[in-house]
Length: 458
Image (cartoon, rainbow, N blue to C red; front, side, top):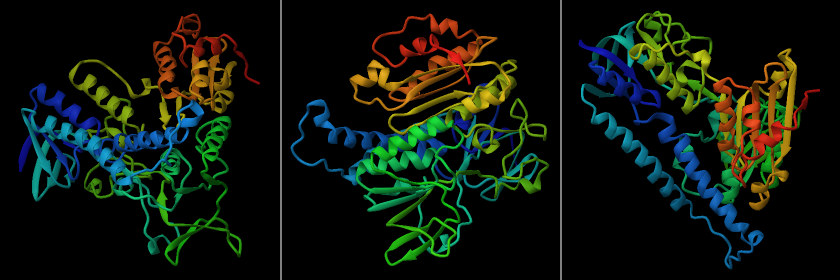
């Protein structure tokens, strides 16, 4: 048995940064990775998918050249092998950077293999047992594969093996109308595929307000994506060289036929084969490890950080988990998970930036709420770019004057939302930003204008 001061299981967004802090603090640290350094974001998530989004946007803008007075004589051709090669180069550089960072750390031992708990403070990897008083679980998550009738009879893709695609699917059927599914839907439609999104619910991105969902649906449909909502009893079957997805429980179910199937119905934590049954660590019914406000599990000396704790599921929340743990453990700085304000983005084009409460949540809060809304068609930057879909929406507590939440769906919305995020963290009245002078012409300059036209939420 090898004794370490600390063991980190997984090299996702939290792990390497925590390893650096622990080793700098003089702890003999082990880090274990069974696959690729950098986890989901670096290898099959944010970085490679946003590289693909950029290529898809280039194709889209090339086709729109005449809208801007730019003539492109030949039809726009997309070389999917070059698209994939560009993506691989970008993601590969990030993976290599994380790998070199970890391999260059003093006082760090790297184990490449699958880790399993033998008891609360003993982990086995490659037949070797490691022991530490401090263990940090950072095993992340993966795509959910639902118990869907017929799925065992067809080939299907998830966000992970979608990264291996170097060809253009003739007709891509995507089951799941949320963030991952929509990003791939618009992306592959822009590459040139026929795309159908199949969603069981009555609207897309159901966690967001109806006006956001409706506008997102309009955006993707305007580009030719087929959206099928209220798809009951989804089943799949092989039909010749195609895949048939049934959308109804009727005796003669409606079907959509496609060449390829992508599952985008959620994520699940990587705890199935972690050996939690050999420990006293508590997890919930979905497999997420339970943590308190400092990311500690119920077992002393064990933390769960990143997607595996079910308290964020984003790269930025994973990194914040590291910051909270390091602050409490090493800096005598009592940072808390409950201080974090929910924020996230949907990286279709134009993107959605979200923070805090939705309009529905504000209505249900019992507060007196003010709302400001401005359409992107009234934003100069959007008109100049001929990208006027979407809107700015901000919710304010009428009594405290604090911002409760916001959605910026439109060009640069994923960046402009940070103006409001920072004000919310500062805990200061909306009047501070409402009276600020922003640079013209930008999207952010219309945030003060929107806040200057607040009305009671009806």
